[in-house]
Amino acid sequence: MKLLVFEYVTASGCNDPSLLAEGKAMLEGLLEDFQDLDVYYLISEKYSLPNYLEKWKGAQPVILKEDLKEWLENNISKFDGCCFIAAEENLELYELTKIMENNKVLVFGSNSNAVLNCSDKLRTHNILKDNLPVIKTFKINREDFLQGKNQNFYKLLFNGKKMVLKPADGVSCQGIKIINSWQDLKRSIKSIKTTLPHVLLQEFVQGEVCSVSLLTDGKRAVPLTLNLQKIESSANELKYAGAEVPWIHEHSNQALKIAKKAVEAVEGLKGFVGVDLIIGEEIYVVEINSRLTTPYVALRRLSSINLGQAILASVYGNLPLEIKYEGKIILEKNDHNLIIKELKN
Image 1 (cartoon, rainbow, N blue to C red):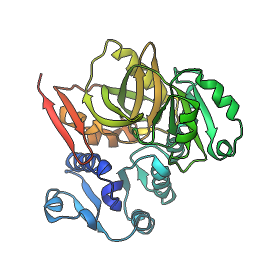
Image 2: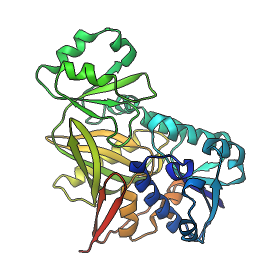
Image 3: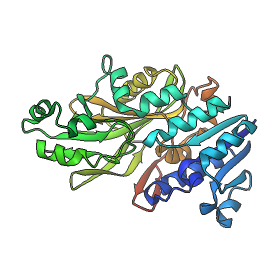
Image 4: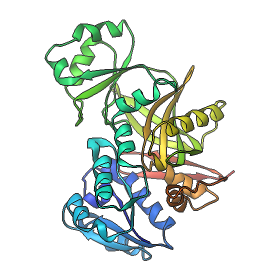
């Protein structure tokens, strides 16, 4: 099989150092896991330094000078399959997946319908709300709100409570704001960046922010690990600062079961996915990431199997029976680097 691999930031030449460090780490992990396969990978000429290209002698680099999507439209049909990394922001993950599907190339990830259902977090909420514990969520049509419609309804929601305002298609903690008052809401809603017409207002839930990494074949899901997310708060905004992989909690088993049920509720999720949770008085599902997420960088180092190739196998319907992990990894994220600290048992 002729396999194409790419990561959106390094392939598109996107100039966002906060995303570059995680993107490079995930791309390098996949290339290392796929070193025995017939692999080609896309890299923007902006990042095609000789020492970076020489590191992956088992894979063939394709240096991009043109727009990523334009190149894919013209060339993706030359490949049998594609395993790529992109975020839901601006519906990038959805649009890239559609390009693969339209050209009948096997995607080693979720199908476009599942991606859309997870990219718009209101869709995810509506799919899960009847059968899983989710945070109480309100949809705000931003244009209507700014024109003064239905504002009294949102005023009454606060009543001295904290709320969370977030883009419906956000990624990581980008754009999430802690709202303490009606006046905060009015000020903050103008600055939310989103391609969707609506934003989300949620009740603030106190608890441990964590995630579950899973493999899924489109119907069944196998939880891999529970991971602690390190979230920093500054000026009522949240920022992802790293993770502890794996993380043991007294409610670990329940969290894994809830994440499994959430993934199996969204038809078409495949490959490596992540479920964000908050463990407080209850365990709440926050969102589902229909894509490779940063804990993969740690898990592939600790796993008893080749995790990258397990992702490929899961899309074919072959989920692992058992995966063992040895040790723990601390991921520390700042604006320019992802620091990986491996701790032995």
